[in-house]
Length: 339
Image (cartoon, rainbow, N blue to C red; front, side, top):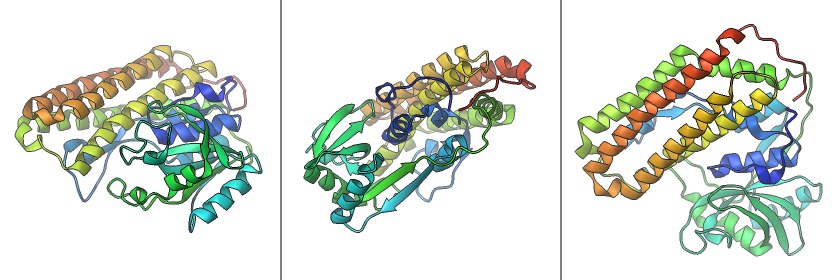
């Protein structure tokens, strides 16, 4: 763990998945910045693709891998038979002071803007058993909340039929929990050593070039035939909007990671962290534009093409600036410190 002091309320995220894992890490006494230790892009093969951006994905290891590799922490996704089994499990775990991540339908969450309006798969953390209520935290920036929810409301949110009909390729998320528990730290490298290695790998020229090429290829496809890309199914709208939103979230996490690495002793990363924040805002603006303006047709497709082209330049410059800052550090030997 790095020697940064992090309180629970200081960690928020632009997506609910990293918001829950980050929240649990803070609760367990860890700095969650390693959730931003990966960046870059890779091609993906999906059976149903409606827009070019779906042909590649940003690089992020699974949360299970990240938690185990950086912190020696285990996580486990559990599917329960029914709400009775869920309630029993929650009370047992919370009785041991172990926070639990739960998958919910925001339609049933009183604190959510989706409450009784729209079904939306979401994640929150349950922290304690208050008898007829549960204490929860939601650190997703779109629905920040720390308080209580009645047991019936929480169980309804976890067993909602809508959770069986998520995004393309998703499993049935009903009655699922994620347990995160501290493992044995073991003989692990210092935070600075691991951060340095991750940054060098992320900014490898070949990886950076492939990401820039993918973004520009996507922009070119939209620009060449905007009419063909001017309509999307409801599922396609969700996928593309989520693609932009998750990328905005990851760049914000990358900024946090770079600042934590700098604080742990890896020099020259402040400008790179600021640039990652700028990229996060760029991707968030792109998502918002797509969500609000896509239905206007060809003009929106062309504008999104421009935004992708701008992002390709920004991402290439960002990686190059970090690579230059790290150029004299290939044999860097960080100070000794624990995670």
